[in-house]
Length: 332
Image (cartoon, rainbow, N blue to C red; front, side, top):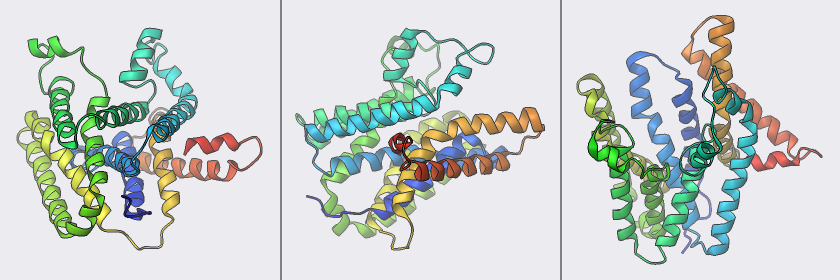
């Protein structure tokens, strides 16, 4: 049952999340401020993207045709930004700036990692959504959630560095990996919320606010304390705190619709474009500032990268209706 038709707060949230994703790679601050900002705020952005995308897909009770349409859209985005990223891909895989890549590695990275910066998010989304869509035909949401939690814990211990590389357990299971594992828990969150949309929007609005405040506080306490005293277990405590914080922010945005007069459709399109385009800008701006101008100004670098993202968006938006440039519409 579809309860709402527009989600302005989610569109705004995705735009803000895209700004934070740019910050993760542009590093706008130094020292402790950088660590706290990235771990306490910016790292929530990608999980928020996963949950939101999953919710918007599953709330429409997708059939096979809608699943095919979703997969087609993801692959079009993958191809569009893959072509855009060819220069950076060439540099990263050409000595002396990078290591060459075999066809085998390219195929492996396409399905389980990244072929170009940011591409892992698209493939992880596609694979996780498809897997949960197929599972939902056979099992209920509780089983899906349990499976997703186990996969998330496994990935956190085996793939994300909590267990040392020389650990026998990790060596034995290291062949079981893939970026889809990072996404599945958040995709399952989106599916469950979509299936209980009416109840959530009508019954737990106040509870969503309380959940949001508590998780934000726990997240900041976790990051501040562990960054200063127990850095070695930062990721361990974040196993639970990060996904629950992302879920709390999503639920808060879902239950509290903004009424401000903002261009939400523009925000929605910008969020996708910023996420997939900024990597090239980060590399270019960092090189120019460091090697040509001779300065390292983190906040300036971040500001220039954001300005370039905005410039590219408005260029694409203006040119997509011009004859010969209509293909630009596939980048949103």
